[in-house]
Every structure is written in C-alpha cells, then in structure tokens.
Image 1 (cartoon, rainbow, N blue to C red):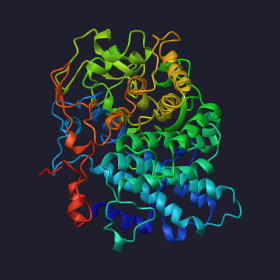
Image 2: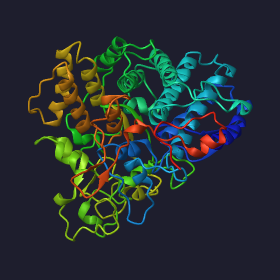
Image 3: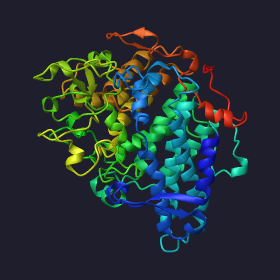
Image 4: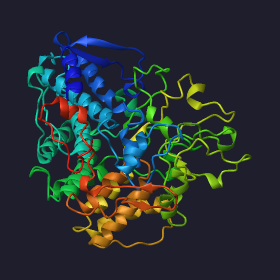
Length: 540
C-alpha cells in the first residue's frame, strides 16, 4: 500500500480542500491547500474539511463505481472503441493481470475519502464550537456517514480490507486486513450515529440551496438498509455484528417511507435529464445524490464534473443530429440485449432507461466500425446530451464535454427504499411488502401493471429481485444484488457465468473469486505481507 501510504504522508501535513457549498457543495472554482496543524480552529474550518471529504464522492472517470458495477453485472458488456485498451473487458470478463489492474484507482480513491473523514473526526475537538455548538454533532454525523459510504464501497469490492477509524501514523502503516464483520460493524456504528444526529429535513431544492448535497437522516436510514441487505445476504448473517437487527432496519426503512416526505414521481422518465419534463436534480424521489457541476470549466484538478458520464455516451456517429438529444462519448458499457428483452410489455422503464438503435430514425447507416461489443443498445440514463443544433449541451454552458458533464447521480432513490422495504418485510408482513412492491410497479406501468402476487418464500424474493433489476437498471445496483442473491457460499446462480448471450460476445464470471476484485498487486508487494490477495486471484 506504499502508493497510498506516500499520499497519506503528504496529506498528514497538508489537507486538500475544495471550497464552497453553493452549487450543491461544488460551486467554486479554485482549490486550495491548508496545513492541518494550523487549520482546525473554527466551525467554518470544519465545514471546509467536510466539503473536502464530500468531494471524493465525485471522483472517477472510467473507474467510477456505477459504470464498473454495471459492467461486472449481467446488464452490460465492456464496450468502448475498437482500438481502446481492454480496461472494461477486464471487469466484464473477470480477467485481471498483475501488470494491469484497473481497480487500482478505485482502491486509492476510497482510502482518500476514508482518510479525509478520519482527519476531520480526529481534529473535531480542536475547534471552538461556542459560536455554533449545535453544529458539532451534525459535522461528526456527516463525516461518519461519508466514512460509512466509502467503507461500504471498498469492502463490497475487496472484502478483506484494513480497518482504519483514525489517521494512520506514517510509521504504522502496515495495517493488516480486518475480518469483514469488523468493517461492517464500523459502518453500522457510523450510520447509527448519523441517523441520530443528521437533520430530518427532506432533500429538496430548498434544502440544497443552503445545504448543498449533504446527507440527511433519511439518507442514512436508507443506506443502512442497503448495507444490511448486502451484508446479511452475501455473508449469510442474521444481523450486522449484533448491533443492527432486521427489526431495526424495518423501522429505519418504514421511517423513510412514512415520515421523510420523499415520494415517487408520477412519471419514471422525469427522473432523468434528457426528459422534456425533467423534474430536476432535487426532486421528491432523490434521497441522496452525488452532486456534479459543469463549472469546473475543464479544470481536471477540481473533479467536480461527472467524468464517468462521457464513458457511456454514443460513440463515433457521423450524424449526431439524428440521435438528438443524446450526445457523444466513448461507447462503454454497451447494454446486453437480455436486459432490454426482459422487460414486460408496457413497462415504461425500458425505453426510459435504454436507447434501442433499431428504433432510432437514422438517415444514414449506423457506423459501428469503431465500436467494440456493440449490441444495438446503449445507456439513456446519464448519457451526455446535446442541443437541437448538435452542440454538446455542457459546452453550450461553458463546460468541457469530457470533464464537466453535470447530471447528478441519484445514489439512493425512494423507489429503491420501497423495494428494500418490500424485501425485508416479505416474511414478516406480506401485505406491507406487497403494497410497496405494487407502488413501484404501478408507476412503471402507468397505473395498470400485470398483477404479480408476492409470496413469503424464494419465489417472492425472485420477483422483488427482478423488479429491482428493471427499476434500477444502469444505476449501479445490479451486481451487488447478484452477489447477495446466493451469498458467499452459493453458486452465484444469477451471475453471468461463461455463457454466450444473444450477441456474439461472451461474459464471464469466476465463482472462485466470490465476486471480489483482486487487491492491487502493487499494494500487496509494498506492504511486506500485511495484505493477502483475495481467493481465486492467483494470477501473474
């Protein structure tokens, strides 16, 4: 972990801060440096450090969690260009090599976020809170929510990771891996504190105007539900380390549903920026969002734009006016036809989520000469957009089309909360589970869904899992549902597994890895034995 350790040594004396809380924590141009030893004095200093921690959520280009998760699932192939390197095929085929492991940046990014949260928490008592004593616990709660968020991603990806609840001294950096249960225990403790101390105000346009994209109590309760379902499903556990039970999570999710003020939009497509009737980035359905802005103006150092969105844009088409409003990009994560064809007739979510090229009114033949694994289906959600006269939308606003795409990532939606609740109530309150399941389907089918009755057994679970696939397609959730479906000791029956699909392309899943990524070999070599490689990754 020397690469990370070196960065930690630097950051132990210098804290990188991205200032500002306007355009949802992002609306400032320059970044600056502050010396930690002289920095933590006022509540305003704590807010700046908190913004620096939130900023890590934005980071990611080809390696962003949402795209990586979709490519690893049965929803997408690797895609990209014919002459591109094979970074997405590595994730698509579970075919990593010691000399080329594109998950290195994922590993590093999450430790940056964890470190920034830990530095803030370690220095919180140095601040004079007399002017705003009520703010102290909220700052702590936000930092712990963020630490939980970062740790949840890194432990899902790698399984066996070091457990750091405070900044590490440069002389004590060879920290061994912890048991996953200990990591999830810290996540659960952090989220419990966040639930008790974050504001219970609904995330909305008025909230964002003064609070940016900050976490709320409802976001923490919803994230706890996601953590609980993954941990208990994947590891076949009844609770999280004895401190968060199924009953606790039922109460948390019920609280969000009944008391948060969040609700489903009436029209599914209005969740997404391309819609002429787009409901806005702070709409009633968004419980927690990762915020982006076009106002980096091409400055890569700021990393405030959604760089990953360029990856899923349309590739290499000569006549962009024929696919308006969808703009160009690198053509990554092409959609598997099985996903498109799995939707029931009348389900509005299919055409709201996926571009079907056969249905586009193209005046010229589709040029696929520079596309790898083109299936005829690409992302509609989060695809970069263009204006009616063919200008890239972000450039028309003054941003850079690679670095500054600005559609927020709806990390937690109310529909997800409903489906988590349907799942967790399935065997204790079937009527409630059915009601929440029906709410999602009613919206999807404009109030007239084909009836499907849940049962409190595996068949009912299967229905909810399929509903999750269609509701949350291309939002980064499918892979994790696949892993928790059978659990760590199962056969991963839902995962792609050396099968040829409806296209000429193959997708691979290696069950011996249990779905975990390889820990970067460079980190293992530099940690002198403190880190052990994950099972199934004995590769050169």
